[in-house]
Image (cartoon, rainbow, N blue to C red; front, top):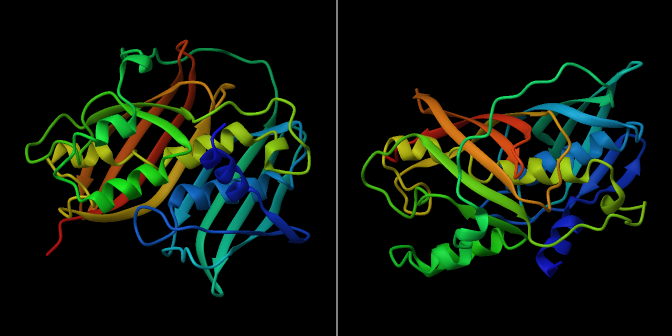
Length: 297
């Protein structure tokens, strides 16, 4: 495991300061605000720590309300909405400087047997044949060195490999609003971790998937219009809401295919939807996100 992954796990760990109240640290992202995936993952950690260990998150629905301040800690308050025989519901609110910046509702379920079917995995190349982010970014001489450095630093804990050129790698002409990336953590996760940290959280793989899911989901919106994104300054944007459904077990330290598309953009907003598959073809997660996508005036 590299140091960046260890630092990420420390970032996702939370300090409990009172019953149902937790505090997390922040750090800057590739834009001058807290990365949305960080807030979502930390809120899910907070919610999960009030739920019995035999129940795992099967869905979350979240709204990004205000930009997070990377220079200040975030306080998470958890409301215990319902504790049923099979399902548990929690609501978490992230607060900075006395104002909510993010809300999350999550539902947890005990393991059950049931009906079984899934959409088939789409074709995709073997991730081992694709360039790493660091290798791919070496070809992007049109991006400022500071931009490249921020991208690579933000993704140092994650091995993320684009199947095709990302929006900021090739732009100017519209492309199909569809993109694929393979991802996994940059190192294996401990199967026998200490129980008193995020390492021992039974939700850890789900939390990491929530963190990573906010990195590329709106790329397909940009592709449809030949835009490169914030890295080249031809759009400005931010996440508005985010929803995930966790269908089947998976590991975040093993390859996952993120198959993403955009069915619509209108009114300064763009919609991304995606399915995440394990390498053996199991549909693990469904994701939908809407974001602000505006052309600068």
